[in-house]
Image 1: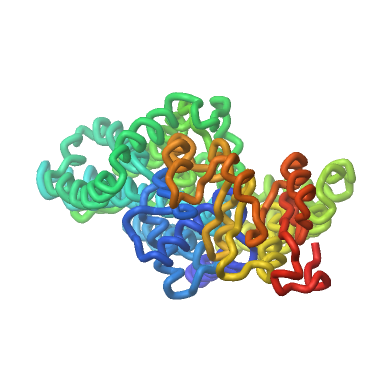
Image 2: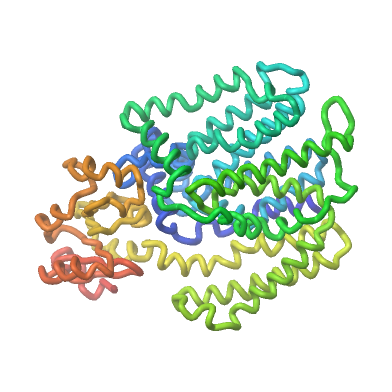
Length: 556
């Protein structure tokens, strides 16, 4: 039964994967970078609106570009790599648990991992952390076996686990930078020292593979963009971790709620003392022993606590940073056969969620478009959580308890789809682009007046000339810091606002922020008419009839 449910869990988190529009800023921007990569076949230098986008490395962009080569530039293609990398992580978790404890525990670990809210969220989001998590998890697992199996042979060269780990870290660096190198080593080094097998982590072939993986792309980027390494090492890594320059700070306890809530209900099981029924790890040369069980538990707790401390001390904080910790929680949970505490907490939480719509003050300030779907989702999800918690608390069969605990979480994609679509009306420009598509002829220039989002370019399928005095609309630290260079280049899509006042003409479509009253007044004073509007933008076109579009065809 658990094996079948594992497959169901893997399928469930992919349901309606492409149903919601790409959300700005992250999804829209990342999706557009992948779309431009597929359109230009430039799989070396990522671009955003035709400008170099070097804030993140190449792997995820290349993966979604490859998906778009097959499926076209769609939401499904943009999100598909995140889902596939999540499945790949689940396979590593299954293999690790099966090798140590057996198939049943491996299935429990995978079910727990796939039904964690944080896992589900980022398996369905166009962002790099699902790919990064896969490479980090593979590296950590590689180091574990380098210490526990290869390290026993006391060989510092050609260690299989270490080679896999260094290969994975190289690919992780190409996914999100040096954090993929730091995190596995932060876990593996103290564990190897504790096990007195420090040499097992180091392999000449591993280092060779690591360099061979990252060197070609880094060299190509450095040739194309001379300040690439300085930007990556100083701004995107050092400043991100040690200063608040990137405006992503938070208190030291920032990650605690996300760790507990993001792994519900399984995180509650961690507070239960393991029972004597837990299976013990196996090695090639000996049967499971109590002595060998303790190191694995220590290793898994190091996997959770060391990265948690590292990110808590960092000056850059985002919930997805702790996604690589979810597999460790799932593996610890797999060794716990009783889930009564988790079931009770889930039932209580479900009752609270289901009752929330009864208190109008909770949604009073919410957009009416969002409030309705939010209430519906809360009621359905709350009932599912309450029911699942009660069933898990009283059922006698372990398998049924696991299914009852995971089912409500696995239903999240289905239950929240109407809500996500409603949020997309405010967090995406898909509907706005649909309104203005009839206005845009192939030769017309689309100009954003202090206005640009990745989803805007993604759905228009064309570059947008952006008139801006700082370039912050691109949400790219690299573009912002090189504003003077890009805004001064004749062929650049980034222009100073002085360019706008000198070139306002009829053969353009202008997108203006709805709250930018000064710019709106200028356009309207020159005879431009509002042709369409969205949640945050107004579109102006001069003399609509001259463009071959009847006034009655344009609905703001």
